[in-house]
Length: 275
Image (tube, rainbow, N blue to C red; front, side, top):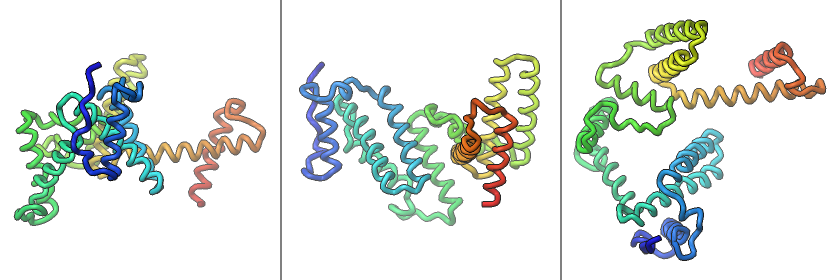
């Protein structure tokens, strides 16, 4: 393995925690005495951890656990430093370049704050933001409306972004009611494929249903990931009620049946409404 270049002057301010973190990562990636696991990593192998850490940040926010949020933000920051260090080793960019790039972008996208531009209202500001982003896409030779919607986003989130981007050029259902009607149409189509036993087509129709649901969420100004997380939490809470009820009867779920568990499920719903 070729020798690793020393950390750039991004860590020249001795004692600052950010610079100390850069030094730590450089040491972990040093072929002479570094960590074997860290040395084996690439952008591709680290990417799943980066996504996972972002979700853990969101989870801490959802739980309103600020001490945990501090820790999770540190974990996410480590991911940024890790990717930046690998790029620095290749002579492409370093953490200083990453910070400079986002600084430039934020100033460029806020001419009303860092310049003398003025917007009449919030809608004009949003329109200006989108125009600036369109100019950036053009500069990157990404002229298609959907070109820079990241493929690695969670599927529901990406579906929302795709439909939102298409809506900006007029490709959109005018009302939520029309999207809901489309959803009914899609459920009828999947029913046909299930009845026919064609699971390949049923899978495709299920994708259509989920896409329409994401579009409906956008029309209702609801984040589908947040909505589904809330439902997941509700399901978990109610199923725990079912398990507790069965435990009081000396049973486990596998010793019960659907009718008994469904009755306890309804009890859980009733208890939540009363509470």
